[in-house]
Length: 173
Image 1 (cartoon, one colour):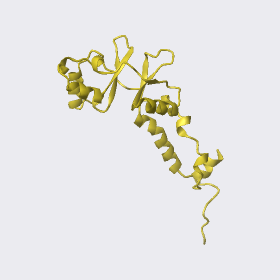
Image 2 (image 1 turned 90 degrees about the vertical axis):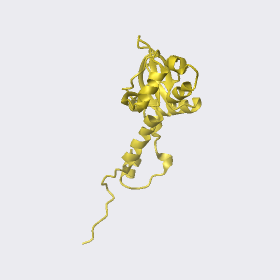
Image 3 (image 1 turned 30 degrees about the horizontal axis):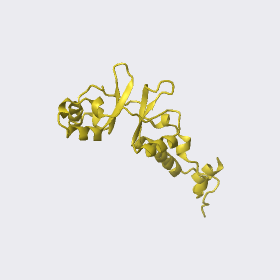
Image 4 (image 1 turned 180 degrees about the horizontal axis):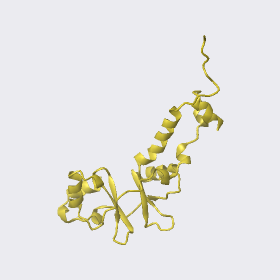
């Protein structure tokens, strides 16, 4: 507590004493809760068309969860999956479920950002679907590198705020 107060007053604190924000922040605090899933039977060509038209529901993302009519998570498809599938013969008839991945790497909302980052690095991926611990087929959020790094960015912003404290420059009259 004291080191944070001292740092806010403008004094340099050795980094060895800084708490790692990735160990203190949960995935649930930074995840996107408004992620709209897509139907697994949607055609890849339809998704590609929506991306090309800059549909705001899909064009700002690099991946989309696939959820069946029973609201169960069944897979994920990335923008790269879409691009690769368009090169295949018969691409206009391919479904998202045939192109995406059903081998999911997920995160839980109560785990640390540190654990999520480690999992993404281990699997060489840039995003995780956030699922319920009680029902791993129930998607409750989406977290990307950008979301995870936002916790570090907030820490940097907070460190730039300096409070007036006990060390003040005296004005000479």
